[in-house]
Image (cartoon, rainbow, N blue to C red; front, side):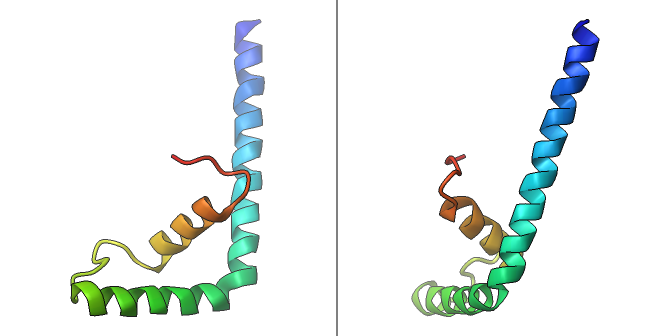
Length: 78
């Protein structure tokens, strides 16, 4: 019986992940223009203040994931 219950739990978790991925994708598509502007402003201001090495290990997708994670009402901090 435990194996069946574990299988149901795994299925629920996978369904949740798919729903979150779809929601994030829809959000990204809907706000892409604003996110592009925001990212370029972020990079420009950061490089002005801290030099060319600012946010070297990040990129647009890292930035968008951070904004998405921290701008959703239901999200919890990592």
